Length: 236
Image 1: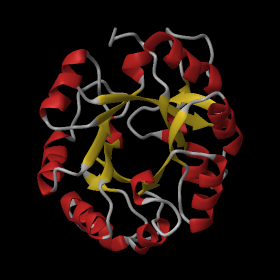
Image 2 (image 1 turned 90 degrees about the horizontal axis):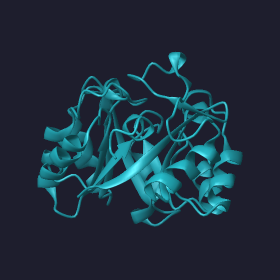
Image 3 (image 1 turned 60 degrees about the vertical axis):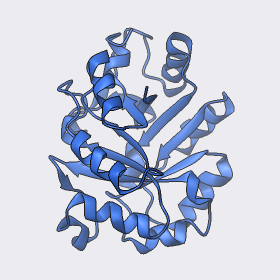
Image 4 (image 1 turned 30 degrees about the horizontal axis):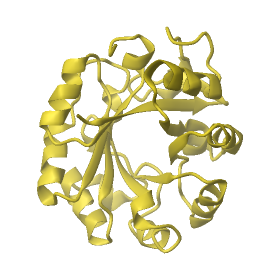
């Protein structure tokens, strides 16, 4: 069974409900688990209801505006959570800061990193198994600051990342996030797994019911990012 990783999308130090990547429309999360959108309270609700201790944190202020919510990250770490953090990496100094805070795994998001050379620099600072490359897509098309990646097929980008030593990948199509329409990335996940059995693949966006998790398992996915289906209780 794929490892389920609950998601905290943070905007202005508040957990928001991500829908289809339209970040200017995101609203504070409404949850059956807890009457709060405070990051620590929501994380504790995930732990209390589902026994989850690993959390994926997307710092949307960092990703969009370079305003880093290190305070929320510190609180989550202090409460014993293991974190997989996308804080909009653009400069190697950010890696040092997050690593020194004690973040267990850092996400190098294709949306924000400047170019492939950034990945080579990153693994000089932290162990390669603590760096996860996020293949960020919008309706199957790469989202990137680097023009050459915008024009390449997603599987080609993964191959380039593998060539510098990476083997941990998030494959996420933002258009499907929060929509509950099922995963649209499974064919690509299968292709990435075929490249190497060592590749660890996390996907998400669209999980609605237990059958979606089972389908991901049959596609060789190792982990699944889930938010809405946890908050509305569909996976009980």
